[in-house]
Length: 162
Image (cartoon, rainbow, N blue to C red; front, side, top):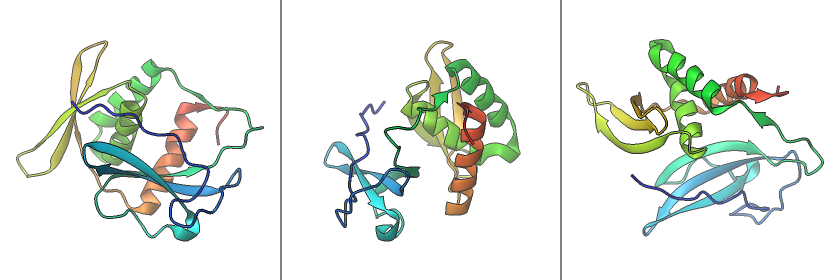
């Protein structure tokens, strides 16, 4: 298992050094550098898509210090929602994105990957409390799909969101 800490967002754009304002949209990428995982944040104007070698990327909004923090649903709720999505062939993109969130939040562990009979990549995840193992298809949603998935997850998993 690969275990690493993801840095908090930077106060400025990696490429242009533009200072992010509260409420401003920005993109974050994770890259490998040697044996380390590093994060770079890009303002919308500098975003040209994920750079080569990216292992993950997402779109965010710079929080407002005055703004109330959103409360994430309890882990058990996220796991139940994930299990419903995982069981549905039509919800594989959402199950994949939610599984990434749960790995980031340390609700699930990434134990590796494998290929299915058709050559599709599967992430092997486990939930430490129940010791259940899941094989989640790795999907490549488009930018529009990612934005829609983020909005759906926010509405489902954050109290007082959307």
